[in-house]
Amino acid sequence: PYTTLFRSAMQEADIQSLLLKIDKLLDVHDDLREQNKAMRSAEASWQAERAKLIQQNEFARRKVNEMITRLQTLERNSG
Image (cartoon, rainbow, N blue to C red):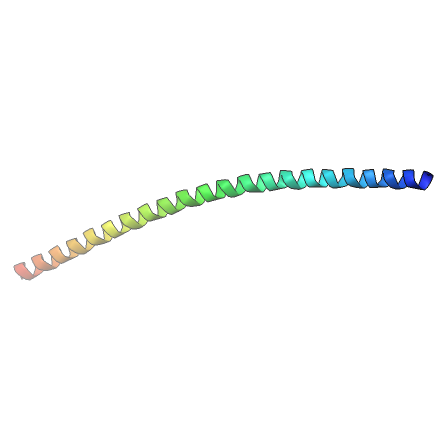
Protein backbone atom coordinates (compact mmCIF):
# COMPACT_ATOMS: atom_id res chain seq x y z
CA PRO A 1 0.00 0.00 0.00
CA TYR A 2 2.82 2.45 0.79
CA THR A 3 4.44 1.97 -2.61
CA THR A 4 1.10 2.39 -4.34
CA LEU A 5 0.49 5.59 -2.38
CA PHE A 6 4.02 6.80 -3.13
CA ARG A 7 3.57 5.98 -6.83
CA SER A 8 0.24 7.74 -6.86
CA ALA A 9 1.79 10.82 -5.22
CA MET A 10 4.61 10.76 -7.77
CA GLN A 11 2.17 10.46 -10.59
CA GLU A 12 0.16 13.36 -9.17
CA ALA A 13 3.34 15.44 -8.88
CA ASP A 14 4.27 14.52 -12.46
CA ILE A 15 0.81 15.45 -13.65
CA GLN A 16 0.97 18.78 -11.84
CA SER A 17 4.41 19.43 -13.29
CA LEU A 18 3.15 18.63 -16.77
CA LEU A 19 0.12 20.86 -16.28
CA LEU A 20 2.39 23.75 -15.26
CA LYS A 21 4.58 23.18 -18.29
CA ILE A 22 1.53 23.09 -20.54
CA ASP A 23 0.28 26.35 -19.03
CA LYS A 24 3.67 27.96 -19.64
CA LEU A 25 3.72 26.69 -23.22
CA LEU A 26 0.24 28.08 -23.78
CA ASP A 27 1.35 31.45 -22.42
CA VAL A 28 4.38 31.44 -24.71
CA HIS A 29 2.15 30.43 -27.61
CA ASP A 30 -0.22 33.33 -26.91
CA ASP A 31 2.70 35.77 -26.66
CA LEU A 32 4.20 34.54 -29.92
CA ARG A 33 0.82 34.72 -31.62
CA GLU A 34 0.45 38.38 -30.55
CA GLN A 35 4.00 39.18 -31.67
CA ASN A 36 3.35 37.53 -35.00
CA LYS A 37 0.14 39.52 -35.42
CA ALA A 38 1.97 42.78 -34.63
CA MET A 39 4.81 41.91 -37.02
CA ARG A 40 2.39 41.10 -39.83
CA SER A 41 0.61 44.38 -39.26
CA ALA A 42 3.93 46.27 -39.32
CA GLU A 43 4.94 44.41 -42.48
CA ALA A 44 1.70 45.41 -44.20
CA SER A 45 2.33 49.01 -43.21
CA TRP A 46 5.91 48.92 -44.53
CA GLN A 47 4.77 47.33 -47.76
CA ALA A 48 2.17 50.04 -48.26
CA GLU A 49 4.79 52.72 -47.55
CA ARG A 50 7.21 51.03 -49.95
CA ALA A 51 4.59 50.95 -52.70
CA LYS A 52 3.88 54.64 -52.13
CA LEU A 53 7.58 55.51 -52.30
CA ILE A 54 8.03 53.48 -55.49
CA GLN A 55 5.12 55.35 -57.03
CA GLN A 56 6.57 58.71 -55.96
CA ASN A 57 9.96 57.70 -57.33
CA GLU A 58 8.46 56.77 -60.68
CA PHE A 59 6.59 60.08 -60.81
CA ALA A 60 9.80 62.00 -60.04
CA ARG A 61 11.73 59.98 -62.64
CA ARG A 62 9.11 60.79 -65.29
CA LYS A 63 9.23 64.48 -64.44
CA VAL A 64 13.04 64.56 -64.61
CA ASN A 65 12.98 62.79 -67.98
CA GLU A 66 10.40 65.27 -69.24
CA MET A 67 12.59 68.18 -68.11
CA ILE A 68 15.64 66.66 -69.81
CA THR A 69 13.67 66.24 -73.02
CA ARG A 70 12.46 69.85 -72.85
CA LEU A 71 16.00 71.13 -72.21
CA GLN A 72 17.34 69.10 -75.12
CA THR A 73 14.58 70.50 -77.35
CA LEU A 74 15.32 74.05 -76.22
CA GLU A 75 19.03 73.49 -76.82
CA ARG A 76 18.38 72.20 -80.34
CA ASN A 77 15.99 75.05 -81.17
CA SER A 78 18.28 77.76 -79.85
CA GLY A 79 21.45 76.43 -81.38
